[in-house]
Amino acid sequence: MSYANEMKLEFDSRSCNEGFARVAVAAFVTQLNPTLEEVADVKTAISEAVTNSILHGYEGKICKILIECFIDGNEFIIHVIDHGRGIEDVKKAMEPLFTTKPDSERSGMGFAFMEAFMDEVKVESTVGEGTRVIMKKKIGRPRSEYEI
Ligand SMILES: Nc1ncnc2c1ncn2[C@@H]1O[C@H](COP(=O)(O)OP(=O)(O)OP(=O)(O)O)[C@@H](O)[C@H]1O
Ligand SMILES: [Mg+2]
Image (cartoon, rainbow, N blue to C red):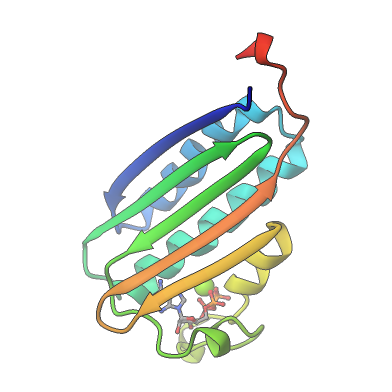
């Protein structure tokens, strides 16, 4: 029997909630017996995606960010969703060092970090409708069905 679990979180696009999202997702992923390094990787990826929704998606407006987490066997899947301005050219946005806010201390490395720390990163975005970042990572060892 394969182990499956799911959770959803919705919160305001305030920068103080970035830490909350990071810790909540890390707590959820703990059930996969991750290494400390794997937890740190997931936290970094979540931080980058949530920060992007706050800064670029909503540009300071207070709206809702949704995080959906799924566990499928030993794979951890996260969706970070905003209904903000969207991304015109996703391929370009994902290039290392590309940023549309070069004058506000952005380095254009957020997507590069997500790709470095997760196994897979996909971005679905429509201008004027919003952005969904889908990330996947195989974590720890698979649990036996007796532990569930
Ligand atoms: N949720 C989003 N909504 C709208 N635009 C986004 C979103 N996420 C990313 N972008 C666009 O993609 C670009 C690249 O994002 P990335 O995270 O790689 O760099 P950055 O946020 O500009 O800089 P850094 O993450 O290093 O501080 C951003 O500058 C922005 O234009
Ligand atoms: Mg960023």
